[in-house]
Image 1: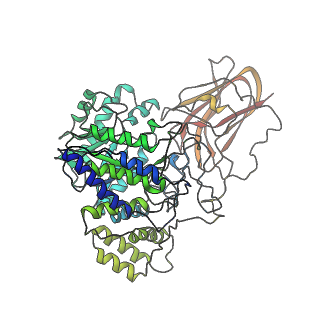
Image 2: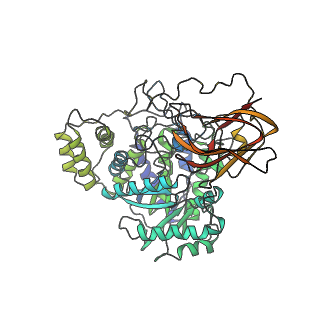
Image 3: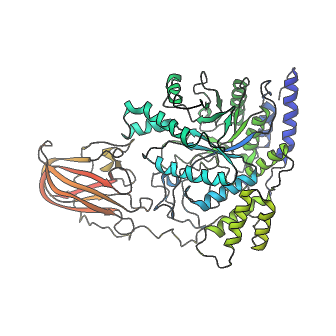
Length: 616
């Protein structure tokens, strides 16, 4: 690190030295090491020496609030019928219903939570997470939040957010939101919101927050103003739009945007892993430090700073068949987290945002996993003790919440320990350490110092295998007339286009726009033919859980005048019974066949992974 000539420069060097001592203790001798063969000590040392972050005159050193950026977007049995998108990424490569040889569910992530894949509406999971937060010195949660509308998976995200808020308030923690304004654009794209109504929809969101959250004592504020982060802005890009959104509020929020987004008019910015600066798919430590130096220099004159510490970046998108990778930032056996935490602390922040608690898709998790153990939580404890030497929880205490979770989430209680586990959690949340320890003693509840996840037996498939392995429709060698045929659909969501229903690939699919019924799929067979049957298929894996779709069938010879062949009836798609397949007898001569969807019990639109039509 360059030593500045000013007193501020001297202070920065002293702070760095202190922090080096603080983080030297974060070795996490208990638990597995990251399986990266390289030694990053020289690179990390060079990166630390290159940090040039000087304490600003406008912000004094203080104990910052430590808030974890939390993804409330996971669904899993038994709370949900199946696994949500963020456990499998939709590409058909990962199926959490399947179990590998080690007993782990096959999730779309390079990392595996100690609880296994979970639902963010599961109270047992939420209490486990809140217990870890409280014991590690985390002060609260920043929710990655998409609003209040029943569109896409936003309803489930809102339910999860409300469930977690109830738990963290019980635990005496705080909360704030990081509003994903891109949700407005996504709803427009999905035809769930008219573009003309976009501004009104945003005002509705902020009015709801005003009425339900901003007056809550647990909500984070600055000088009486509710703290609102935005992952962008990405949709509302003009100051005038935000001024209008905030007009429905009693007090204008203290508005913090993502770095490099609208710095000219937001109250401040927060940093995030700069994966856009990757070269050949990798973000170097040198480039990371350059970004950190530039970010903190831009924030130097701000009276209030939200700084971010993060452990690395290792996304699963490409491997999951869900687009491209954003790049890779080494975890470096926990050193990346210490480096970014060090940088944050040197800037005298008001809030340290941890990016993230549980984004498994992007590999930025600090929640305990098989691969990383408890390292980051231990380091947060050390930071907490730096400002508050009386902080009473230690590394070993972090191993107890998973044991309490095992007991409380179990269907049975053969040892009679559930009442004691319940009492321990309640005492912990109430801040009564003595009662907490007494409940553990009375229930003979002990934690292992190893990193032990909750695993399935190798033969267990979380509900059984998918399908019988026997085709439900024998094509008898006949040609699929719909394969590659021209298709016209009334609507689609995102890139789930009509041609994907006839491309011969069960991993791709058509899906109509949300709640835009009737949704139609019309296939042109080029010539009028005698048709015998149609087969509609969804992905047979259990991630595509049982659903009932209602549709009618119409036919035409000219593509204009259609006649109803079959009235709308319900068709059950069940991976465990019929491999997610419906067979429809046609017995008609026609060139055009149209399927008219009016309901789907598991989605907001009609869905077809593969449409097959057979005849002469």
